[in-house]
Length: 321
Image (cartoon, rainbow, N blue to C red; front, side, top):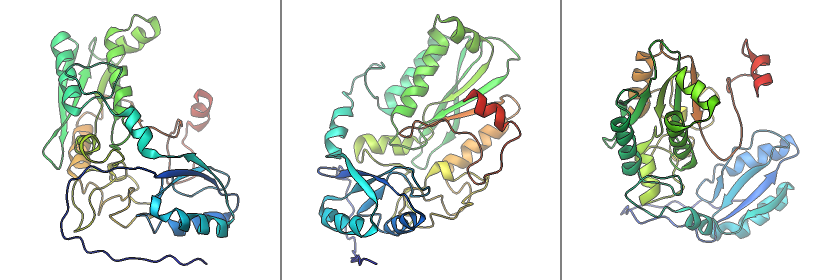
C-alpha cells in the first residue's frame, strides 16, 4: 500500500478570496475489478488533493477525478500502483470555467448564465405578464436569509400537478437554466405537444433550491456544491440533496462534514430542506410527479437509490425510458 503524508493545518484567517483552478487536471478512470474500487475509495479520504466528481462504486463505470496541481506526482505514483486504466480528460479546469462565466447584464435571456437576482426578477416579471396564470411562491428560506422562490402555473382549475426543481447542487448551473427554459416554454410555446402538456397540468416550479450556494458559485467558488452553513471550524455546507428524511444516509458513506456529499447531522438539519419539505407536504395532494434536474451524468434516474428492489411500475418506467 502506498503512503500519503497527512499535513495538519491550523487556519488563522478565513478570507473570501475567489477560488481558482489553474492547472487542476481531471482524469477519467475506469476500475475493472472490485479491488480497484476498494483502492480508489481509499483516495477519497484525501479530498483536499484528490477530488472525485463521482464516487467509485461500480466496476467498469468510468469516473472523473480532479487532481490539485501540487499532488500530480503523487497521483501518478498511486494510480500506477493501483493498476487502473486512466487518461486525461481536462487539461486545465480553470480554462473551462472562464469560458462559461456569465457576462452579467440586467435582462434575462438564454444566451448566458444569470445571477440569482436576475432569475428571481424574471420570475416576478412573468407573474406580472401572466397574472391569471402565474403566481409567485416562496416555498422556503435559506441559512443566509434568502427566499427559495418558485412559481405556480395554472391554466384551468382541477388539473393534476407536476413539481419541477433545480439547482439543489449549487455548481450545476445548467439545472436552473433548464428549469427556467421549461417555465418559459410552458407559457410561450406554440408547439401543440407543449401546449397540451402545459394546459392539462398545474406546475409547481422552483429553479433554485440552493440560492446561497448558487450565489457563492458566482462570487467565490465556481465548483461549490453544498449550502453555506458552517458545520465546524473548518468545514462549511451540507449536500442538500442528501438531507431529506427518506432513507437518510442509508449507506452511511459520508460522515465527514468537509466532504461534498456530506448529508448533514440528521434529516432536515438544514433550513432549506426543512422549510421546503414543509411546503411540499402542504401541497402533496396537488401533484403526482416530482422531477429534479441535475447535470453532468446524462442520466434519467428513478427510485430507488438505497436498494435494488424494483418499484411496482419498474417495467413501465424502463419502457418509457
